[in-house]
Image 1 (tube, rainbow, N blue to C red):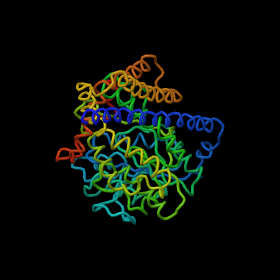
Image 2 (cartoon, rainbow, N blue to C red; image 1 turned 180 degrees about the horizontal axis):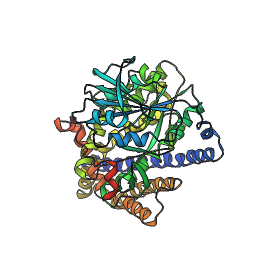
Image 3 (tube, helix red, strand yellow; image 1 turned 60 degrees about the vertical axis):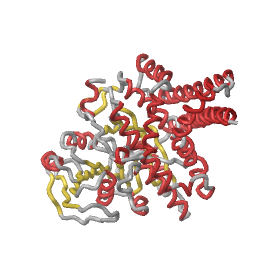
Image 4 (cartoon, rainbow, N blue to C red; image 1 turned 90 degrees about the horizontal axis):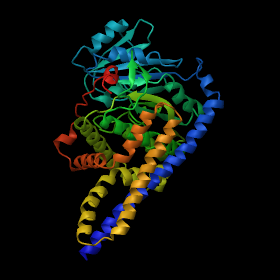
Length: 469
C-alpha cells in the first residue's frame, strides 16, 4: 500500500511539472505570435505619430520616495526628458527622515502652494504641497509615512491628468516607454483601464547620467539568473495573457492606470506585499461584477530598467515578500478561481496563478520527499522515472530558449558572450538555484515574524550598477 502511494505521488509530481512547463511553452508560442503582430503595427501603424502631438492623452508620472535624498533629483531629471509630449511628475515624499524634500526644493525651485487636493483615496496626512517654477512640471506631496501603496494613493489624489504612470524612484525609463504604453490606450480609450510594461534588470549594464548606454548580461550569477526569469515572466507569458484580455498582474515598477478606475476601487491596498497584483485583480472583479466593458493590457515595448538583488541574502527577502503577497491575493480572490463568471481571468490566468505559482513549491517539496523514498523502496520504475525527469527538464529548457528567442526581436543583448551566458544559465539553473528559491517560497508559506517584514533591499543605485557588473 505505501509503495503504491509513494509511486503515485512521485509520478503525479513529475506529470504536474510537465503540464506546467507545457502550459508555459504554449504561452510562449502564443506570445511570439502576438509580438509579431505588435512589431508589424510598430512598422506600419501611425499611432506613434499620433502620440507625438499635444493631442495625446496627458499622463501623471507618480514617484513614491522614502529616504531617497541621494538619487531622487537625478531620477526626476531623467524622467523629465522621457519622449512624450504631455506629462507631469508627481513625487510623494512619504515621511522621509533624510533630506529628500530639501533636495527636491533646491533642485527644482519648489514653492509651497495652496491648491485644491482631492482626497479621493484615504491616505496618511498630507503636510504640504510644493510646485516647481522651472522647466520641469513637478509637484511634490509631503506627507506622513504610510508605505509605498499609501504614497502612490496620495500621488493619484494629486494627479491632474486622467492617466497615471506609477513607478519607482530607482528605475530608468526607456525613452519611448510612455509612447508605447499610451499607444495601447489610444487604441481603445473607452475600455483600457491599465497598461503594464516590460521590466528588465539593469545590473551590469552601462549607465551614464541616469540613462542606459548599453545593455549587458550581468557577470554575477544571481542577477544573471534573474535576467532569464524576467524574460520568461514578461515576454514569454504576458503578451499571450494580454491578448486573451485576462492579464492577472500589472507590475508595480511600471503601470499606467486610468485614474478614475483606480479611484473607483479604492486605490492601492496599504500594507499589502503584492499591491500591484491586488489592484489588478480588484479591477478585474469590479468591472466584471458591474458588467462594465474594460481591458487590461501589456505592452512589451514599454521598457523600464531596474536594479535586481545581487546576493542570495537580499534575493531571499524579495522572494519571500513576493510569495507572501501572492498568498494574500490567493486568499482574497479565491472566489474568482475556477469561477466561470469571471471568464478567462477566473478559468485560465488566475487559475494558472493558483496552480502553477502558489501550489508549485508545495508540490515540488512533496516530490523531493516522495521520489527519492520511492526509489529507495523500489516503488518506482527507474526507466519511466528517467523519461519523465528528462521530459520535465527538456520542456523547461525549451521554455527558457523560447523566451531568449522572443527577446532577440528587441536586440538588447547583441554579443555572443551575452547570449552564451544566458543559454548556460538556462541549462544550470535547475541544479541548485531553482531549489533554493522553492525553499524560500516554502518559508513564506510557513510564516512568522521574518516573513512579515518588508526587508531592506540594499540597493546600490542605478548610477553605480555598471561599475561592478
